[in-house]
Length: 315
Image (cartoon, rainbow, N blue to C red; front, side, top):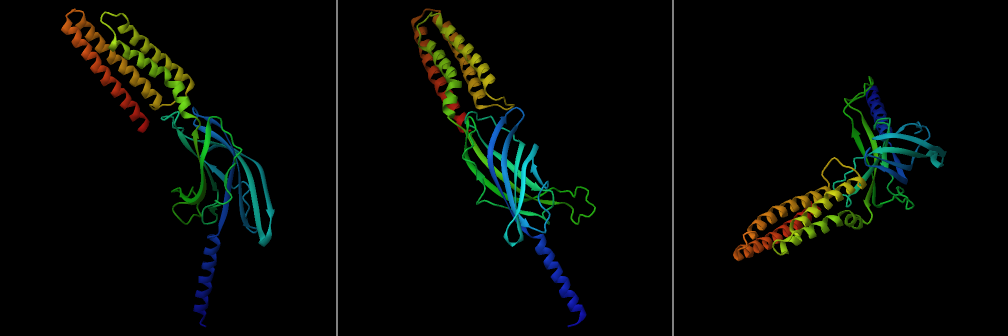
């Protein structure tokens, strides 16, 4: 065989072997043992979890090589590696971390959340590529988060392109790619309807009381005092809700319900003042007309208020 063909064969073989080595994949699993300290103001949550992987003995181990993504702080409590058959090394590590998470309170108390726990290796994807160990990963059934229940768990792997070489003069590409494993834990609040009615019962009772003047006799002093009391009760209830419900910069479901109720009472005031003026003439036809107007607007306001509340739940 001519020397040039031998050289090409060896070059091809070396390139193939190099590609095979760089394409080696490592399983990475994650088991979450604790979720706690849900901080709606600082937009964080805390978690404890175990990770593990299998790697070849000649490879650099993973001690100090794994990086929780989007974390504020983390610590490694336990790290161990053990040689097993076929020259493989089984590594396991316990991590305690504080992760960033933007809590969406707009649907409180019917809100749900997808907590993400992400890990990357400091080495790029040409050296280390992870495959999520879906079979062994999961969430401990001993986790008990006050006010929440776990509804789903999923773990997946992907390659993340950062669009930079981080100043590495030896980089051969314009950007570095890193292998990432992401665990997603779905949670939702327990007994949301009970919480909802505790926070809004005062609003709906106040609205109901504010509708009573539409059916009261003429020249009754309570025609305006009842809606006034209802408006005061709603405003007071709003302050109570804001002191107990996690704060949010966006308009929440409870904010919308309180605002709708207050606007409805203002419209009730407007109609009552107009019909009181009609009844002050003491003309029977005007009094009868004022009652028809009261009953008509009572029906309109009630229907519109119910429709708006239903839309707030659906949207």
